[in-house]
Image (cartoon, rainbow, N blue to C red; front, side, top):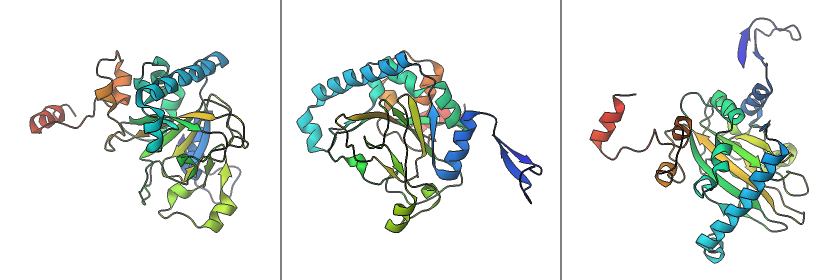
Length: 273
């Protein structure tokens, strides 16, 4: 997406305007302006089904490993942390989806890392933590002229009004304080999207999951991409030390930006920057 310095033919007094040439750039512009958008992954029906089945296998494995009671005690029973470390290669490929990477690199200039990849279950007719308004950089009240972090919520299932699709407050990534109830009531938008799409957010956009009134759980896989200065939720490089990864995956998963153990290691890395 380029900014043209010329007069647009359909406006008056405009010297600069966005020049959009692709569907990815349309989403980039909407995220910059409103804080949210929807991006098609490019997956066919078979791939979408494979991801859904892998989600179920990983969820069962996760519950067996950590125990439902323990997770429930910590309000973690509807979340699967670090999906890509549990043995399903398809989640590594999902996190490096070319269309998604193209979009994220347009929104965040310079190097990026995957801060987190979590499975999210919006349970049928049950309250859950993601149903509260929040930012995906929580407890922060600042704004930046360019995104520091981007949320890409992959829809494992269709996101519908009935099953509690994501609700956003447009433009809230540009204001520091949480808006008033009156503003929220007048301006909130509920996003619908088909399975296989990514819901894209500036991570400072306030959002929440809606109430799932359907008879089935709604599933998603949340990705947060950040500048490397923001530490990962869970150190992926330590968990994936013996995985066979290509150079692009190693960069995205944070292998090139771990915290130096000492001054010597810092100086050794610094000379290559």
